Length: 203
Length: 203
Length: 203
Image 1 (tube, helix red, strand yellow):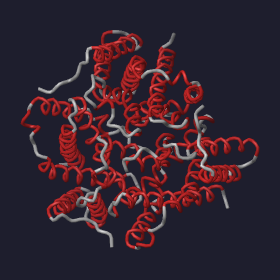
Image 2 (cartoon, helix red, strand yellow):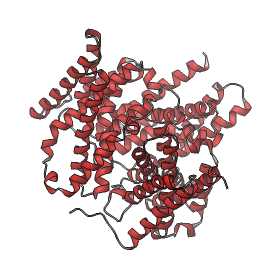
Image 3 (cartoon, chains in turn blue, green, yellow):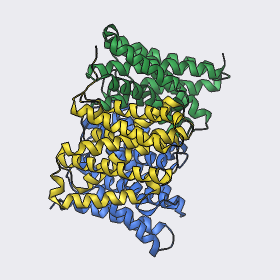
Image 4 (cartoon, chains in turn red, blue, green):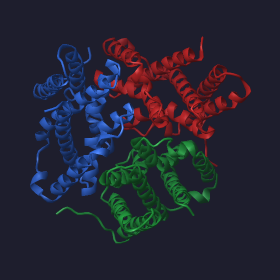
């Protein structure tokens, strides 16, 4: 499998994970199917769109890959007409959401570095790519965004993953292994923080 | 009248309609004239700016057409100092708002398709162009955005208009007739949904 | 000192002023250190990022100057672990915030004009550059944005500064003196409006 194939596959998984988390959130808000579709798209594409616009990376990825929004549309229709899908408890979304966070953070960092962005800016762009979709979802649903509430670690996991990716590119040849290891670091750190109720505390 | 003239004329009408709807909303929030001007500009230019940034279509249209923000400034001054203008009831804005929605949706779809965007992505960009201004207005005014509340159809009308435009480009030569028919479809569908209190319901 | 040096110096001062105002706001919201860093970055970089994206001015300035986010990171760490820094009263931020507003407004206008933007659009872009960071901060913290509340003049000061800059470029050779005079106009007007409790009233 080439690097481009790996990236496409991960992007697909990350988009699905975020789209589903957006749908569950929209349902809690009692939105109609079009609202559910819109929130799912914003959650899934928000981070990557902002990344592409800031880096001037054209075309924006979901513009050239219309299969992504079409699949979200089909998911929304299924979600709206099959009651059992809507019974997924919010807790069940923690793993997919962590995977989406890890994938978008690492791929955002990788793309920025490959375009010659300085290291710290590239890590920040990775964090933006990983978190902006959920941030936009929460702003639109009129909440104080999830990532800024003192509930476990979130952006910190993304930053750790981005820095892990950057560090590994010096030790390992090729981007595939750094991508997978940094993804694992983000996901495991996120799950541990939820499980053990870790927070950053001020002293 | 050339296609470019038709597009310019429609853009002008759409901008005015959305600017006025922004002013009425800002007034309900008891903002000062600068706030009224800012909300009017955000409502009128928000969708087109996001479209141009995502498509990398330079220069962003209000940047090169400064007559648009200047007219909004003059409208704001009139609006702030002529009490009778502020007495326009919110209901009176439903038609102009529907026209603005239709115009920006169809022109956004047309521009995206003319730049080679795949069909479904182009329709989504059209919907974004038509709805983002009102969405940003509602977010800034700290409301759950209008388009996501279960009140009649809104984004659905935009999506129907965008798809009508795309379909008609295969049947009719030139873009002018598809633009006008798709605009009519969006406006009529929106007005019918308000009049008959239509909603998308889940089953 | 060359014009480029002057711009870099002013940008540095403006970023620091806005970053600190973001930190104070985030602290009032009881956010953890990562939230404080994120809000500081959004306040400091929001306006310039939107300006660069709208003007297609690549690379976006904090992407190529990673020293800016790194300094904000160090400031955040200091801020999070030195309680005395957090005791700064909100009133003490009025001067730095006015300076940040003035600097970003004038530099945004100057950049837009230097890229051939028509005058009124360039002034609007300056106002956007000066105000968007604080606007984004307030939206994320889920408040009705500061600049739209009827509390003293804010965006009006930015607009006056932008127009002063534009007018002076006809009278004076070079951009350095117009930058400094327009900056002074914005800051003094803002401070006077706070001191004398000035507002725009409707008649």
